[in-house]
Length: 366
Image 1 (cartoon, rainbow, N blue to C red):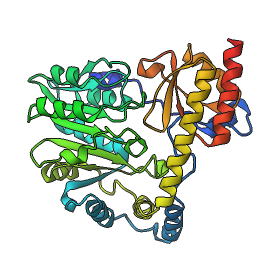
Image 2: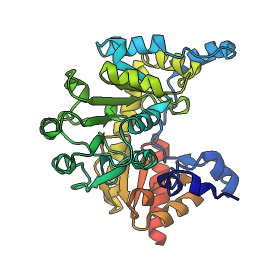
Image 3: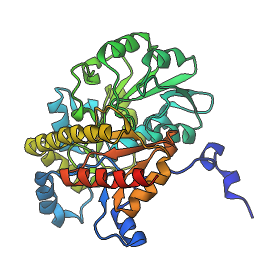
């Protein structure tokens, strides 16, 4: 009998699957815990935009129809919001689909992409599956070293993938470093600025990459509706890029990649400024509380510009498992090369307090 692993590209056979945050239902089923809280997947603790929920409810009777394959209304609304033409906008089944499509389009055996150490794990998975190779550049104080990333680019580099803020560190690179980086990158290298968490940033030196789309650079900006809009379950992301890149993405995407319910939900959520403002306040208050409590517990942490925080708790897997038994779900970062850290999503006030109470008990036992 043929061995299946021998029939696929070696890079695929050797991959370790992406491990998402543990679902609440799984913790209830396996550990018998009645009301666990989940602070593992950077989800919006307020839930989805109420306007999006109302729009989805109104659209349920049309589920027998296929979605608009070109996402016409959503693409046009996003284009108007960014003061662009619709041919600059590509809609995807979450940002992850767009990342995969871009890597598959531009990489192949013999070519490479440059990424940072401890960055979004999907970057490395997509690169390996494409047959290309990854050049991994160390972080400097938990932050992307853009000078070193630019220096790592060689004649076989086709893509640079940059999360800003970075998942899982929550750190950002700033405007001066970004402008210097743009000037150093060769014109034939695709720069992907993954800005899934940009709405949460409070630093005035944060560089919005959309400003630097000059029609000449191979610059692609990624955004998502999973985080601040609370629509992670519907999977909608988009990219802003030159029209010829958008055309190529449309050539390789799956038909109907954004569902009809997802499209109507996002159209409504974009107008729900109250939900966005409440989310930002909950996040800012939660960060202030957790940072204060981490100092009290003498837990080292990385100051964050996102909706999660990276904390050094010692043996992260053991702490994670002990927190699970207390009904608190966080994310151990061993898979990201950070075996001493957990990533904790910012929750509602009572969730943050429950986390700190549980974490104090776990660390006291250790």
